[in-house]
Image (cartoon, rainbow, N blue to C red; front, side, top):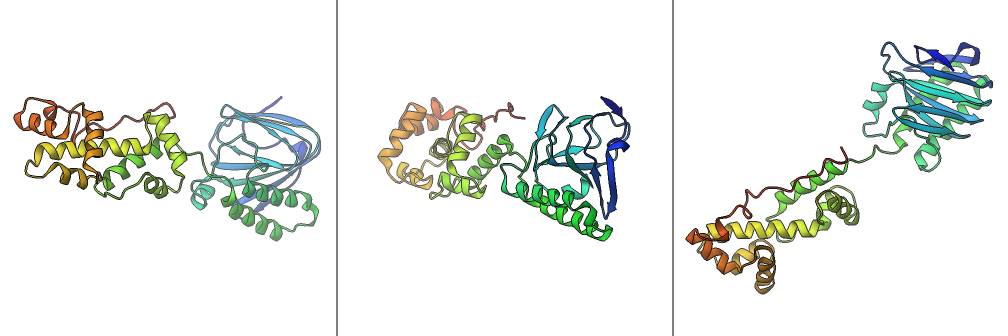
Amino acid sequence: MELTHVATPPDAVLERAVRAGPGELLWLGAQPFEVRCEPRQATGLLKIIAVAEGEGVIAQGGRRAILREGTFAWVQSDAPFELMMSRGRRLLLRLPLSAVQQRHPGVDLRTAVTRGEEHAGERVVAGLLRQILCESSSLSERDCMAAVGVVLEAIGMCGRAPEVPRARVERALADIELRLGDPALQPTDIARAQGVSRRYLDGVMAEQLGSSLATHIRRRRLERAASELSTRPDDAVSEVAARWGFRDASHFTRLFRGHFATTPAAYRRAALDGTGAGSGGRAGDTASRPRVSSATE
């Protein structure tokens, strides 16, 4: 396998190269080749390798992707990579990584991932690249410049970067705290604010915290109600319960007993006397928030 220190294909397989606006198009010849690249200096380029005929393998960043006909993959020029191509037709498009990131923040730019098969937007991009590859002899430099611009815009149709579950949970917890005083708050409201389904966010919450949205909201409401029971002695228990979304006093009492192992009235008496559960650290506005697992970081 040939070792290079610049992210470029061997000259022997280069059929045509055209600088086009912010990018560069390179049509690669049909002969097979293998390259192992270990860049010595940063160029800040994002490369797209597209295959119209034949197959290949790209490896970078601990990932390995099979490139089949009609697919493509990202490669970053500033990190080591290996590229092995069988006989066939392929296209290489170089673009400034910063330009892509600024134009399409959030797009999944993980390298060495096969694209153009499952995601609809990526299939569109793969089709554009294939057409550019097949029309090599017909495209003028002006055409190439326009083609690069079209591909740069079309990249916005590609898949989004994988979500970080921890960030989802942190945002959900923050939203719940901000809206906890709204008796009408429902788990679906928290999920809707993130543009995801309740089922999905429940799954992420369960994975990170071991509880669902509804369970967490109920627990925090009980803790806030307990805080008011100990700090607002003139308010009836039913008033405190209603203020935190519990309209049925008997239902509130059952939930409260299940969480604090005592009734609301007994909790209040103990808190005011300074002798019982009400003086503990389990309830109240300063109750410690659940620790979000960092296993997915």
